[in-house]
Amino acid sequence: MERFSTNTAKSLLGRNVNLHLKDGSVIVNVLLAEIQKDEFKRKAFVKCVPYGRKNTLKIPLKNIAWAELLNLNLIEAHG
Image (cartoon, rainbow, N blue to C red; front, side, top):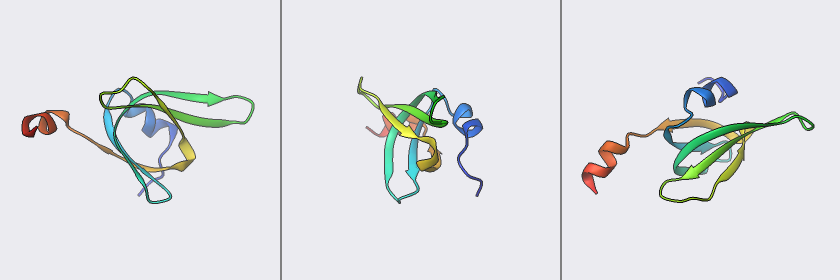
């Protein structure tokens, strides 16, 4: 499995995903909204919006192991 990178994050912008973190935890059903870079510390962050919420999460790119793409049409059909 290739590591989660800026290019991978860019390809998923505007989509709902489950984010699997390197510590084993999962952040369920978030919209990848933006990639932010801290020029002074040379760190990249992914800005995420939880489904149905307005607040945002800012997760360091290096903490993400992989992202699972979600199909909201399937979720809403069963709900």
